[in-house]
Amino acid sequence: MCDAHAAIVLEWADGEIGRTDLLPTPCSLCGSRLGVRHPAGWSCAVCEWRAGDVLDGELPPPRVDVVYYIRFEDRIKIGTTANPRQRLARLWHHDVLAFEQGDRIVERRRHEQFAADRLGRSEWFSPSRELGEHVAALAAGVDDPWLRHARWVSEAIARRG
Image 1 (cartoon, one colour):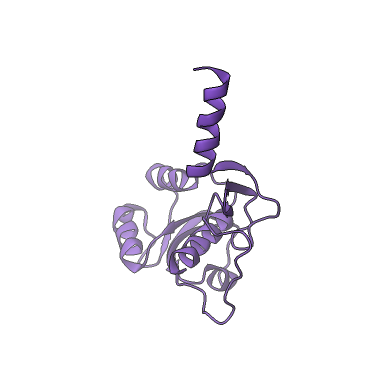
Image 2 (cartoon, rainbow, N blue to C red):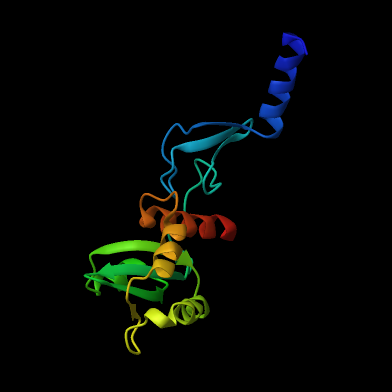
């Protein structure tokens, strides 16, 4: 393909698909700097929120249930909440290891999955190879679990419109 035709194809692709680039300002919803430039404007590449759209402050935040994995001393707690900041502020812990999207059903499955490591009838577990591998898989590629949670919330807001 000659340079002239390649330029035409690139221009067409930019119009149809958009071009990934840095947003002029961070996304107001999730804070990402990665965006997609379309002929009609910018959108966030992470949560797809249109740049410049204003959040409706009168709408309640969407409910995003998460299963959390926290460590305190030599124990790991598997719990669930729709408000992890509030819930984890009330729990003694050293580290937030990972978040997993899910509600009480997913939490119950994890308790059953790691029942051999469970400490009594609590939600606390002894570290094991299996539990460690599960947490590592959830945390893979994520430097900060809170950023993943923020992305899930922003995606829920974007789906709501």
